[in-house]
Length: 284
Image (tube, rainbow, N blue to C red; front, side, top):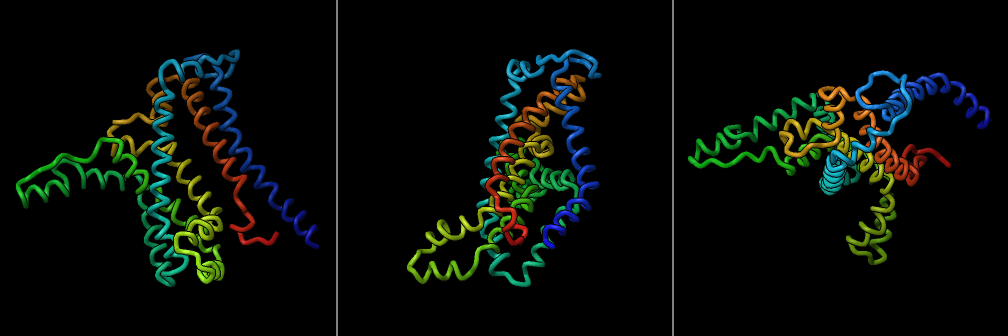
């Protein structure tokens, strides 16, 4: 009976699965083929040419990639530290208040990312909400914290907080209370319970949240443009410039493929270590 159900489920999901595979893979194939075309061409009717990948190193585009990956990593670590106590409260402490907090966080996603970031610009700019009110009260002004690397990372943390918070809360909810209490009864300290019980058992949620935030942050563009004023050029900005102002589709495709391969490799590595059955609540 179970075998029959699996076969029926596979057949039922096949049409939609085929559509999703084609819609996902077709653009990637087009980008991959364009990445080996000669520079400044707009059709695929050319012999393969890998010169666009050479430009990646010759013109220093790897620096933008390193900046993007470094800021994404820092933002992911910061989000984990910020979200862990909040996620723990949502999963184990807050009770019915968890629903209120969840709705409040989800509501922020209903507003465009750009609008929320421009709100921070108006708040932090010279003569903005903070500096303007402080100067009117004290007569002392201060420089705007905008347009630097730190504010870009702040923007990444602010925008992608829900993508770390909810998977983390799900992972923490998978940790049985009896296990924590048993460790405490055996004399484990709070730090030992955290490191040896909670973190290992919540690892699937930690991995999912980290992957989501890192992947999204590595390809983010609005934070560096709106908050950072392009003080740091990220790889997504170089890709956009190559496809639009530069009118060099092969270069844009090559830069995209480098980012896709790196992010895809990290994602596959992380997914291979996730117990999806435990996350979905399925019996093995």
